[in-house]
Image (tube, rainbow, N blue to C red; front, side, top):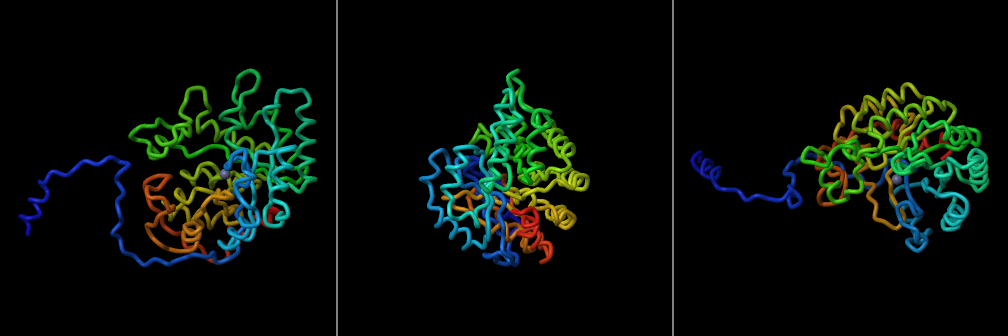
Length: 356
Ligand SMILES: [Zn+2]
C-alpha cells in the first residue's frame, strides 16, 4: 500500500491553466437549504435604469414582470439607484410607473457642473424637483472621484467644499445619500500574481484603479470619512459594506463614531462570508445600521439564495455565486446564523426606519 502511494507521487502531473482549474469540494457537512428569506426583505441596492442596463434600458425589461420576479424571491420592496436628473429622471419614473410602491427611486445631480457659476442654486433646484417627483434619496457612484475632473484637471475629492451644498441640501430635503465610493481594495493594487482578484481584473482590465494620478484607496477612505464626519445631519448609506468590507475593524470604528453612517451589504457576501467570526460580531454590534442589498438589476438573473443562506444559517464552505469560477475571488463562504431580531432589522426594519 505504502509503495503504491509513493509510486503515484512520482507520476508526472499535467499542468493546468488557472482559468481551467475548477476544483469540486469533497467536503460533506450538514447544509440547511434556504430558498425564501425568514422575513420580508427590502433590497436597498438594485438598478432599473441605464447605470447597469445601458441607455436603452427601457427596452430591456417589463416592469410588472420584474416586480413579480422580485416578489417571488421574497422581496417586498426595492430601492432603484440611478445617476439621473431632469428629463432622464422623468424617463425612469415613467418606466417604473405604476409600481412606485414597490420600486423606490434614488436620483442624482450632475457633479460635472461643479465649476459653473450658480452650481449651488442648480443643486438645490434639482434636489427639490426630485423630492417633488417622489424621489427618496440620492445616489452617487465611484465615477465622482475616480473619473470626473474639475476645470483645473484635478479629480474631485469627496470632501471638496464645493460638494458641501449637495450633502447639506440632501439633509434639508430629507433625502438619504447612498454612495458607492470605491471598489475592492485589490482593484487599487497591481494586477499581478499576488492580486487576490487577478482573474476578474484580467477579464475586465478597466476595473483596475491602479493608475498614476488616481486617488489611492487610502485617500478615498480618508475623503469618505471626512464627508461623513463633516455632515452629521446628512444620512449616508455607504454601499458595498462601507467600501471596506475587507477590514471590518475600520468600518466598525466608523459606525461607532458616526451615527449618520449606514452600510449596505450589496455584492459583498464574498467578503463578509470569508470572515464569519468577525462578520457575526460586526453584524451583531451594528445591527441597527446594516441594510440588505444585492446589486440586482432588472432584466438580469439574480441569486438571492446565498445572501439568505449567509445571514440565516451556519452552513459552511458554500458558493457565494452561481458562476463556475467564483467571480469575486476564489474562495467559499460560511453562514453567520443571525437570530430573528437582528435578521428583521437587516432585512427590512432599518430600511423602513430610513423611509425606504
Ligand atoms: Zn450598484
